[in-house]
Amino acid sequence: NFMLTQPHSVSDSPGKTVTISCTGSGGSIASNYVQWYQQRPGSAPTTVIYEDDQRPSGVPDRFSGSIDSSSNSASLTISGLKTEDEADYYCQSYDGSNPVIFGGGTRLTVL
Amino acid sequence: VQLLESGGGLVQPGGSLRLSCAASGFTFRSYVMSWVRQAPGKGLEWVSGISVGGENTYHADSVKGRFTISRDNSKNTLFLQMNSLRAEDTAVYYCAKDFYSGSSGPPSLFDYWGRGTLVTVAS
Image (cartoon, each protein chain N blue to C red):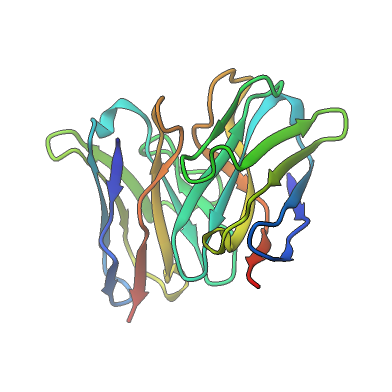
């Protein structure tokens, strides 16, 4: 079965750049699109990246997504960190046998 | 777009509950819909999905045979019938709308989520 693995937590200071990884196992991460959702405490998730590297309207261009087939991983990069970016981030993909798969989530702390 | 879940509450192990999600602001009948849950302090887990016409349903292994997803396109409403509930089903249940319009396939990616409804399974 296809699985997505994320680090439990990352942290950095305001103004810095942080990257959250999402590593696929049991299949190729490039086979289907990867999405990234942001979830602030007590709120529902919202989409920050869809279709690997697309930003929904209203999401600042400080957020970017990418895929690296060689490492079978996806990455979410947030530049110019702000305190408001502090949240949990989940990667997500899908395949035919197990329609929707989420990574375990990464807690971003902005120090 | 608005998705408003209801029907959550406290239920004993082995009991049943029916969740509803009232949708507005988009053409409900054109989108695959899903339920996603989040246990307290845990990550997101996809639970069930349903095709635009309701003819195809998809369930996670953890709920297969116990949960049934359905929809009423005339009332713009999504449902989740949960039977034989267990303590591990305790979670906030979110209704989520698929990004792609007119897809005949399983769920893929989500662009809108409801605020969720809490289901607690305990004696």
